[in-house]
Amino acid sequence: MREDKNTVLIVEDQEINRMLLQNMIHNTYSVLEAANGKEALEILEEKSEEIVAILLDIVMPVMDGFEFLKRIQKSDWDGIPVIAMTGDSSWSTEEKTLELGAWDFIVKPYKEQVLMTRLRNAIARSKMNYLKQMKHMAEHDYVTGLYNRLCFFRSTEEMLREYASREFVFIRIDIKRFRLINSYWGEKGGDKVLCFIADTLRSVAPNYPCYSYGRIESDIFGLCIPYERNNCKVLIDLLVGKIRSYSERFILEPSFGIYLIEDNLMPAETMFIFATMANKKVKNQYQGNVGIYDEKLGRQIMREQDIYNDMGPALQNEEFVLFFQPKYDCETQRPYGAEALVRWEHPQKGMLSPAIFIPVFEKNGFVEKLDYYVWEKACQHLRRWIDEGNEPAPISVNMSRIDCSNSGLPERLSKLVEKYGIPPELLHLELTESAYMDNPAFINNMIMELRRRGFYIMIDDFGSGYSSLNTLKDIQVDYLKLDMKFLFSESDDDKSKKILTAVVTMAQSLHLKIVAEGVETKEQFEFLRSIHCDYIQGYYFCRPVPSAEYEKIAIEAKK
Ligand code: C2E
Ligand code: CA
Ligand code: CA
Image (tube, rainbow, N blue to C red):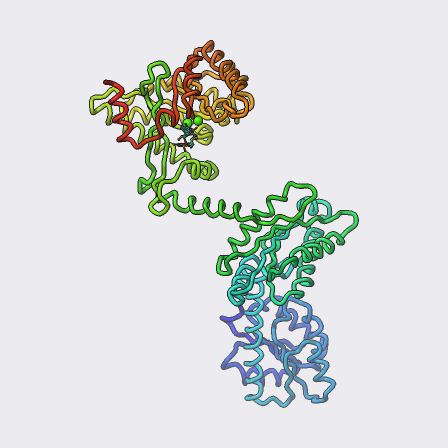
């Protein structure tokens, strides 16, 4: 900013006048002098940063004041206030200088008071302008001149609070395949499209009693208007028509995400997320271009957000606990080992099922931390049972697909069981079939490595994927876990039984052991026994239970 050095440039051909002026102002300002417009331009070229005002004589040789004013009018220096000075007090001269951009006008002979006051005022005004400009730049998007993201969100929030009892919609607008537009018309052409959309918003928004709009990022715009039945449809038809009319050669296709705001106090950022979710529903469709946010979707997002916020502290506070679901030997019907299943004892929400939080953690990668925590807890339990003089049966733990993408996994697991002095064969690893299908070659290697280190591997949810039977011939594992949910359809019991029999027979010929899980009925159990399934896990025998309860079951089994 031009604040620290307040320099005034005096442009005046008469040396005596320059001295006079210099004398009047030098106590307050530093002074630079030029004898004509040309010299003044040269000085500006070098020192414009420090010049806060120009005192400009009009009648001068070489380059007069009018010419000088013309030159700086459209230059970078047009923000520097110019005060024109002349002996001629006629209307026309005054008018002409002001028209050419002079800020003020004084007539010779100079009066110190008048000069100082005008100078001070002009400088103050220019500083105000500068600040306004800075503010504008901070609040507006430089391509389109619309409010930028931050400012649009803020003005939306202010509007919603002001009209607290009114219903509003938040509309997210973007252009399909905008990247193509940039390569078709070039970046400048792309900017022109953005400006066109900005103008379109400027022209439609005032149809509403109150509104806010802005450019959120790249080709994404936002608009918030009061909601009335049908007005969204009318608005969108209007916007689609206008936007498509931009070019006949390359049709611009807008797409929309609409969120009907439920709570005028919510952050605009959240409204934008909802509108974006709505928009995603239409993103890959060729025809449709309007997505409307629905509540179920929203509740899910909110829940995921909560889970996301709470997960870190939850791990620290040991809110994750292990339940155990015993497996039973099909022949003897005695318990043998268990699967460790995690639960979240949430301080406010109570006991949460992994079906709610595991999929969220798989999305954000947190599942890796949680799984390791579960494995370690399982080892601690095993250690304690051994220390208490029992010979515990194996515990199986789940691995997510993300754990398996890390080639350091076998080493980590070996270190873990060593830490607790647990024989690796007591920790069975359940890997879901779909994770295997992600990258069979890589997973096969990892499985081989894990087995070499003494771990037993189970393919979980076998039969849920497409190519289960194909998988069988390539995969080197110890157990297959068949989920009755996938293999038993209510509709065709007979067919299910045939498939199940075929799978079990095949697994036996490959020396794989079979665990049937999700067994809920006596019929299922008896059928599984008849085809010589090895182990059974399911509500028919026992639900997942807390560790203390499982210990009782396991001890009872030994008697
Ligand atoms: P899963 O590994 O297939 O675990 C079996 C699920 O079926 C468990 O649900 C269990 O409670 C349930 N189940 C057991 N018997 C029956 C039955 O007879 N009928 C029915 N309908 N269900 C039965 P849960 O504990 O809610 O776990 C759900 C899923 O969450 C698990 O499916 C697993 O994929 C995941 N999960 C649980 N714990 C962990 C963990 O520590 N790490 C990872 N990565 N995933 C876990
Ligand atoms: Ca499992
Ligand atoms: Ca399973």
